[in-house]
Structure formats: structure tokens, C-alpha cells
Image (cartoon, rainbow, N blue to C red; front, side, top):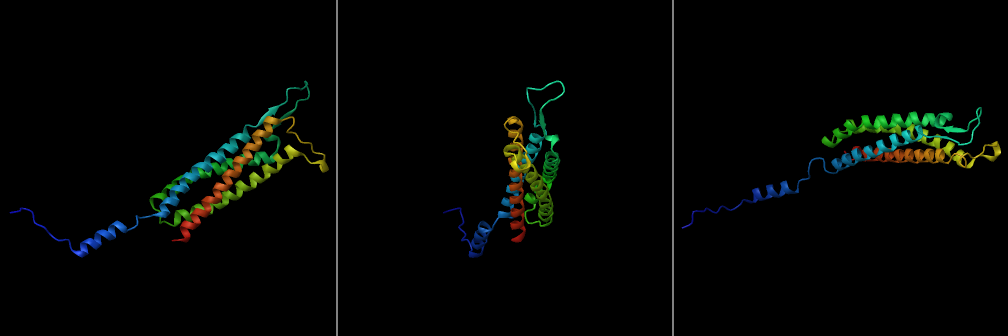
Length: 194
């Protein structure tokens, strides 16, 4: 004699187990987009604040000078570079403040409100970042190449360190711009498939 009782599994219970195993996890791909959004925001913070810090510390004095005349290049000699430093610092600050909303999008991947708010603010700060990056890029171009028609000489032959720092800051700012564009597109896709 056996002490075990064999009970046949009903088809309803088997179907229920199969449905539980096949059911998609809550959030699914939207949660993946939200996690990628958070990671990209961290990268954009590094790019924007790095650009602001690099440009803000760009300064070079030439070794030959007299008592009354000194050759110096600094970011605050150019209003476009001052605009760049202020704007990229604002963009970096906004991205830091947007991290909690990005975390809310991870926790509640189907919530539309935080994503819509982030799209609007990302677009505003994308505009600021691209305007400041473009204005700084034009000055960096003039510093490297000059302009013969207006008799502006290229200064990068003399101020090599200054030009390399400002060029690096402009490249970093364009990285932040590209990341902001990706963030807007990803949020729009997540909202559009709601």
C-alpha cells in the first residue's frame, strides 16, 4: 500500500500556470527605456559640467611680455564663451535636478506625466545647449583659422593650450546636445506607445 495520493492536475490550473509564466512583467520595455534615460542623464551631466568647467578654466599667458603689455587669452575675454559657461552650467544643473523624475519613470514606467514634463524641459535646455555650443564653436573656428576678409588673425598658433581647452569644451557640449536629443526621442517613443 502507498501512502501517497495522486491527484491529476486539471486543465484550468495548468492553463493558469502557463498564463502566469507567459505574462509580461509590469513596465517591460518602458522600464528599460526609463533605465537608459537615467544612465544617459548621468552621461549628459558629466558632459555639460565638464564643458563648463573646461571652458571656465581656459586661460593662457604668453611667456614674453613687458611691464606695460602682456599677451593673455581667457574665456572671459569673449562674450560667447561667457554665455557658454553660464548656459552649460545651467544645463548641467537642470540635468541633476531632473534625476528624481527619471527615477519616478523607472519606478512607474507607465506614468505619462513625468515623461511629458521631462520632454518639455529637455527641449528647452536642448535649445540653450545647442545655442551656446554653436556660438562657442564659431569663436573656436575663428581662433583656429582666423578670417582674412576682416583681418582677424588665427591665435591658436600662439595660444595652443587655450585653443585645445576651448575646443575640448565645445566637443563636450555637443556630446551633451546629442544626449539630450536621444533623451527627447526616447521619452517621446515611451509616451507614443502608451
